[in-house]
Length: 295
Ligand code: YH5
Image 1 (tube, rainbow, N blue to C red):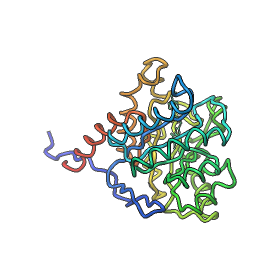
Image 2: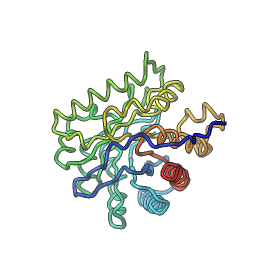
Image 3: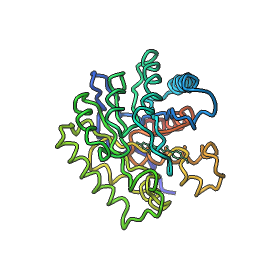
Image 4: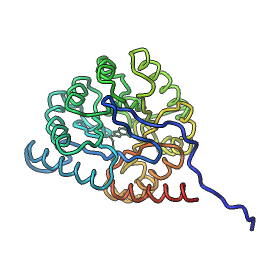
């Protein structure tokens, strides 16, 4: 047996912080957890809008308690096959929830929308980040809203549209195509006055990807370090996990695989993981962090 100790180290320190418009900052010196808050009727089975709002706020406070570093609030489902929602409907769902969370907590809030009018209203209510799964392709007014509020933005890769993206996606080289896509979207954002320091990149697990593409993204995540920007990964409960484990169609049965995916993403250089199961992910990443810093 060789005597040399194998030391697991974190990929080299790169990006210090995410700066919000009001001067608050998020340090990227440890892995961060973004808790998912869906405010869509299908995520709560019964009751009217107020019931949905109360339950969403309750869930938000629970995720904060469990150690979420930020929350991602969305009023339109971007799951494969989901139908689009009007801006009015989307706003009616998320506005009261954002306002209620802001009254109770300073937790950074991300608004999950590709609509400029929804982003504008959310930022005015105190949201901090815009999570745009279209990477500024859907709404020509999004860039100016981001610029006006000096808000950080998540630029996510997606092949096609949510409605049809899982119908026969094909790439020659998925990771190379994602890198080329990021180059284009970063360049567009910069020409519209968005500072590089406010961009977060996300390769979009499950958004127009086959199982092999999703696996390739995890394996080659290190290639995204070249951008020197924070990397976000959203793998929680997604279908590729079920394809590997055959645990059935219920997304809640995907916890073990979701934790593994979050850990693999962080080990390969991701900075933020977007998850449903905040408590369990925080526990897993604290162990990762302890091994990194004590080894
Ligand atoms: C993401 O990766 N994903 S919505 C289907 C599922 C489970 C979960 C069938 N918004 C991302 O979470 N934003 C979504 O089981 C996102 N990155 C960013 N930035 C899809 C989703 C899901 C879909």
